[in-house]
Image (cartoon, rainbow, N blue to C red; front, side, top):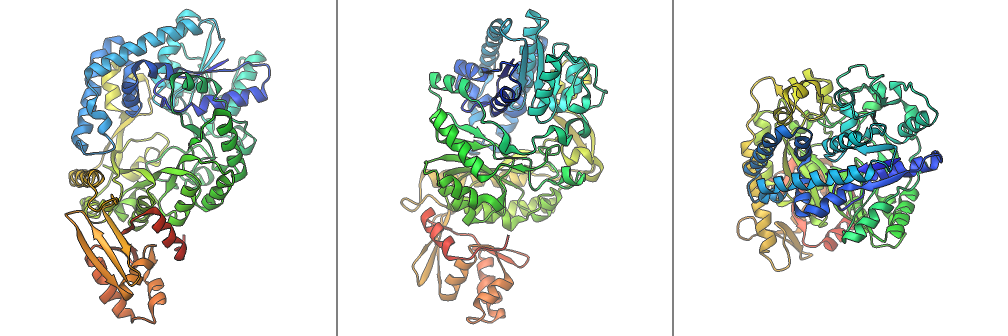
Length: 638
């Protein structure tokens, strides 16, 4: 058996999917010989910069291979991709630090990508025709149509070769893929280990009938459903209960390629599956999760132990001579951050790793995980209006989002997060609140990337469209435009468009505010107003006074003394009015605290207030200064 990963998997990290599956099958089914092939690396080596850009295009990158499946649609595919890229440019502007990589991609690059990938397909098909009897293809990173192209080419050369698709896209579109493409034999929908093992044993034992309740889809057992039902892909018996029992993933083949090509690789590591915030599997209620997210609708939350994670980091690091990792978990559990950080630090290795977090994690926890080696975080921000965040089912508010953004910024943790625009039902008041909060508060911290909402077939919006005024759900217009009309009518791809009831809010003011935001940070990074301090709003503590320096428009300073200084530092953590009064009741009356101290700080936009909670906005001028402050202050309640 061969497990293979096609483009557009990021070239600088191995496929965790095929590495984990290969190790699992070897341990549990010794009758099978399993090999891995990271063909995305070969494709990358032929186009380098173009590949790196393509791998960040999301679903649009699929069109490079889609047009090879349907060559008569090549011109339309190219026009569609160029039109999409142009819209991204216009929406963001050249100062958007998140989309600058798209600005040099042109028609010549797309033509070159098609030519290189076409030759690459022919080469793989020739090489694999006689060397394997079962091929597994993963589809989670813009890999659906590249996998379909390869499957068709291989079946033409060897009709007895059996081909199985797995991964996110195949799991969602499985029934229609098997119906439309005769060169696909099986789809594994959902978690792969136990399902693929079951399929292997059925094939080895000559069992022809496979029940769809196992999550293995065939032409014989699909029921014509638009998407696989939850019952089809989520029986508890086909989930790994204890992740600590999984074998170490096998990245050997990728490692050899990375060494040969001089790739500075970053290794994936799995600390958990599912999302602790997502309660849909546990409760059966589709609304018990972020409304836009479908990542965990069919996955219950399970965590590896801290000891196992640390041991796996150390083993992979030693085996592949690397200290760079990223956690591919949906989100790290906040309650375990400090213990995990202490466990990782005990190895005394200088790790570099990234994690996904939810807003509201304490600054102290972030400082702990940074000390263990975390250098980048993906944050679930999504909105800067509390009513809008409620609409998104985010379970947080603006002040907590600002707190998390601020903590990352002052700790100099590289961060990335999205600001979702066009969510159904958003009001002009929510747009205005978002715009105002960007220009007056969030502007101090690392800019968010504006993203247009995609409708996920596993998400609450798809499952309960009437609750959100969503109607006329259909395939994404880019794929409808490029696919032949008859094929488009039969396929049920996971990329969707939809209409909403009523007139949607105009998000242009937010886009314009974001352009100001991006431009400020580019200017400050290029020309720090204060030598050695490339921050937009920071403080220097003179012990008996606090100097606040705001560099948004020239350099403006504010000096806070005595009670003002103490209160401002105290509110570096989110503090309720009750906490503030209790802390400073001996120094001032409640009325004076509210009207003479807190009020002016809020009015001058030096502090953010939401309901009865307050947050000081300036950051420490160095991470070391921030960590020292964090240790001296008590943390807010979670």
